[in-house]
Image (cartoon, rainbow, N blue to C red; front, side):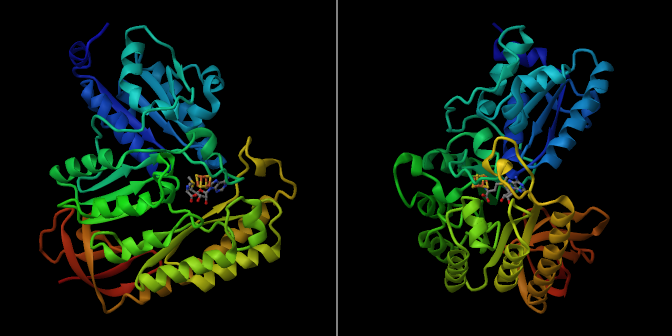
Length: 450
Ligand code: SAM
Ligand code: SF4
């Protein structure tokens, strides 16, 4: 048996690279893979070509993501031919979904790590390198949801904090519950301990992650746990900003909105995906709310937090979506006046109920609807950003802009991207800066630091 100490020696001078795809939960998992690899003695490579270990952390929520990832896995075959001994691990949702099929089709893959095995990656890799253990870990074990160990975070001031794993909702279009399993929450103590440690390491902003954060703690048999967790994290000394995603409109309670209104550090940004504006389609999606209930929820948010930014996810072209249904989506988008929206073309996911539904919408119709939807939402975004002009906002600085080191960028509490010229001043990432907005565009605003 190789001990950790021997392993660190064996890994000396060796490197890893993580190719990450997909949602924030995947980004967080990637930080945990990196943490485990560094505990084993690997250092981050500058580029994946020469790395000794490559982890491809995959996503299968839409077909387009899968195609891109399969292309990359194909490319790795040639990369590995030039680097005998290179270890290729495929992790995440595609590994979970396709298991053995994937490794048979792409024999360059050494290890397949399903979504329930993130915590045991170090042991799996150690066994593999000692010629022990298997190559496929895709069983949906009831994994321990408490977190131990390290994450190598991408940002130096903003931290992802997973609070729960899996999803129980089974929206009829969505593959996530099949590849991420049932909801498992971390204990409040375990979450708070991680937040406290991150604060001690200089982190200021915390994004609590889950597929449906509003059902946090239901698996403990208790209600109202998410609002309790928000208040508890708000009280951790040193925490400056708290964000969370994703909220489910059916489960978003008044207690959570009250917590946002009352707690100093919780940001006034409500990301509440509505998916479709027609109650008929929402029913077929198994979303558990109607158009009217969603609009009531937005009213309640604005009653408690008048300056809140409200953002959403929308799918166009769900099976059976008629022109009238789609117009209900457009009218809801106009009525709410979202600050931003992530818009998606429905993607057929085999194994989900919607994939077998009649009335699949042709791609050209879906594309045309997406364009119309984006045009309406772009108007909303610009209008909301224009309302910021002349006002001063607290911005958490992120860093210099990629194409001009004399321009810095950061985000408001409402998650708006702000750019400002440095004018000879020095800023640091994670610093709070007051910026007076003088120019609004669809995707960002510009201003002057005060
Ligand atoms: N759990 C979150 C929720 O319910 O809002 C988000 C999970 S999912 C990774 C992110 C978004 O992808 C969803 O809100 C939905 O709009 C979109 N999505 C999921 N399945 C899809 C599919 N089959 N086709 C197109 N978009 C999809
Ligand atoms: Fe998918 Fe619905 Fe769960 Fe979100 S809530 S992950 S859309 S099943």
